[in-house]
Length: 304
Length: 168
Image 1: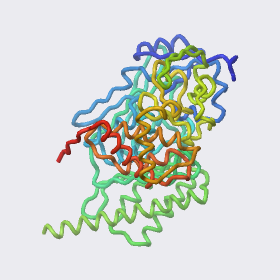
Image 2: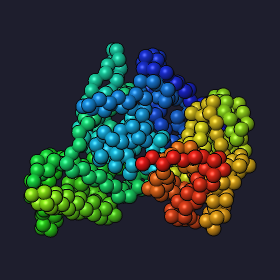
Image 3: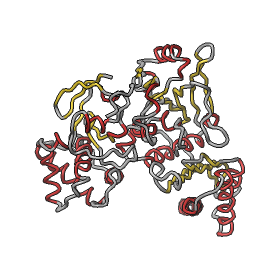
Image 4: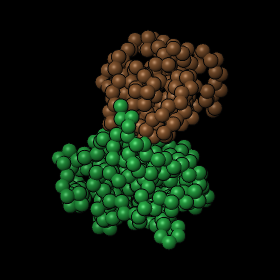
């Protein structure tokens, strides 16, 4: 079957220098970058497909992309580090919300295959990992070819356009991701639906905040819609930051309504199931915030 | 593209398209009988095989990634003593999955057992329950899957006489 098809050429550079040379050699043919391949191979009609005559550059053997570095202030991981390795190696130091996100992404068998770079740079879907890294103020190093090879650090938000689509320079390679090591007073992550199998209806909600005696002094909220992109804005953050906790039902309804409107507007419409899921996630978040603040004030009362 | 790999203990050199999914390669070029369908990466979980002792979806693994590596399919695995541990676990739990998903479930259980068989760490229930959802078939619920994994791990440790020291 399909024996006569021409097979794509595979290049497996061992380091970034070899990668640069390969890119330069095949500058006109637009080589195809291959990380884990999970998303590429699940495209309908992948094999035998239109990619029969392309040059594929497999990133699996590039040594620099497998590095994991950590010090007191930040953790930096290469784009070919699997998300399971991050969860195992950073169990004690990384923000809890990041570990929760990784654990919720897929089972361990799949997590061993999913790479950081792959999950940030997929074309067809936006992952919850990207949104969590965005609210943690992660930055990413990109390498791209102009007259010579450039490397530059960007805030992670900047690699996506306002519609949540990937917006990288032509032929750019994401090499490293860096996040600050800091724990927030409040970290929340939940996902509803399976983003791999039902991405039209799945949704995820992530939030980090600093709490000071029932007031939120800093908050970042983001909603991920795998097929549409990310819903986040200063207005949403400010709305949550202005909350006096514990908040009553009226305030809950107001915030849920506003955020749902934002999600509808950002996504250009939501399916009924997805809308119900987002509403549920937001309700659960606000209830959880109330619980957290009330248990904190109870603990303070007992100490006094 | 010429690739060399070991399938169920047999060393093979094949000439195939470099992006050919591993499940098609195993069905068409190696004639593995227990892989029947190609789901086009829909993640049905029926095509699980072990690639260097780790379970992978063979429909999501291209041929060029398996060069020089070792693949274990259910066809070869069911002739090993390791399979007896899992078979015994199914029998002692009075559970039998359907014929369609049995190969994938066995390979998944084997990969979990290999992850834990020598370590001193306890089996993580949440992790196993999450893994149970990888094979999309309604014949076995997650709790039953967890019970079989526990039993299979106990059988394996007993057979290999693994001494476990509990870290307190």
